[in-house]
Length: 100
Image (cartoon, rainbow, N blue to C red; front, side):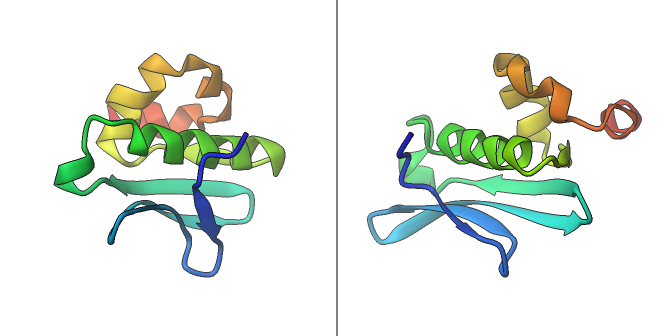
């Protein structure tokens, strides 16, 4: 599935070019745990699915690489994961429980 989302492992981010701007997800990685820190979409592009495209790509990357995810970003925890429950199995349960 081509989403236009690119992965920059050295910069620890997934991003999507939107005209002259970017939407992105920043994360940190420790072994096989990805901590999804913050997803950002420029104001002019909000509500158009850019964040969802980035997060789907990031969660698929986690699945393909045997990683667990810590959803530090409130948008991911409270908006994305309830709508995309197929990714719940990737979430470190002790992490999400301690953040609620």
